[in-house]
Length: 510
Image (cartoon, rainbow, N blue to C red; front, side, top):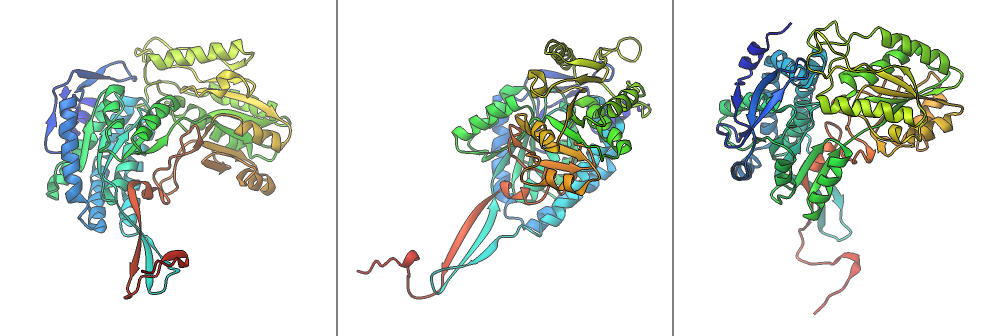
């Protein structure tokens, strides 16, 4: 078992921490927020909430730093990000432990999340030399056209508790190499992670003699988030969280004609065909449904199973559920840790009751665990429920280890069920049939931003643009050309003649 006090010391965390920082300076004038671990119910430490006055200091610093940071060549900015990635390698163990303890995911998942931060830094370093525009031929003789990208400004980042460090770094690593500065509001349920990341950044900033304001953090509840969404000094808000939150953020930012990058909820399904390799199918479905205690936006919520293999899959999966160890996520012998808090436990219980009321058949029973090792009251049993896709509770995303299973007859029916929800994040098909897999990936297949074959719905790999369609928000992070949203696009036309021909052959002679 880890020594959490040692972990906190290594990361520069104290009993009371200033929740607002511009780099070398931090501020702590607001009321305190306790960070309570769902692992054992202990108060890990406290963080001060950002006041309006402190927020103003942050924005002044970030705006000023942008004017200096944008002038540094992109490869130089990439070098700074490379150094941050190296620092993360040094701090991987304690930061992974903090993620696990503060959020409740398994230690391996906590370490894996820090590895994602390292990977996006590596990706960004290469990208810093590839912020390409393009040239075009003009219809006017003696003219040249090209397109280029410039730094955008100060980027606001709102992250969720379930990935308390990686999602922030997905955004910052790309924003930084694009020449932007960043202001981050972490989840009030995992605030210490933001302090730890900022402390690591401060080492890099000091070693490179960088100005304050390139990386800033603020902390607090939704009211602090509202300071950002209404602030026209933030041309881009990148927000990760629930669909409900995304609607509010998107509409507020749109009112001032800002840009939003929204990565919201998922209601992800795996289609299991008669040709599926059931051995990998069961593993993929199991981890997808119970990993992070069902608190990933890519968690598997639905299994759509062909009627010919339905009973076999159902029985194998139910048996696999009996083998799960539920307990302290820092103990690597356990498979499932806690939910984030008791509010999440109540939502879990409410969803089970709602499914029963709508006619669902509980195949693997749930419940809240108590006794030794479960003192936080946040440990629950993963549940499997036979249900219909049209059930109201199935249509909504419940952030908990609840898996709904249902039958299908034809692949077309399965795809309709898969697509028959409001969310469009992740999807998968399990099959060895080439025609089935290609149809699933075609224009008449999955309508999600992520569509996988023979792997589950859960998880993301750096390099591929992450995000989804419909009520998932449409945003993309961490790969491909996602960098473009952090920049402003400009088309340039140059006339190198002594004449002024107009476009479309228009004459304007005097």
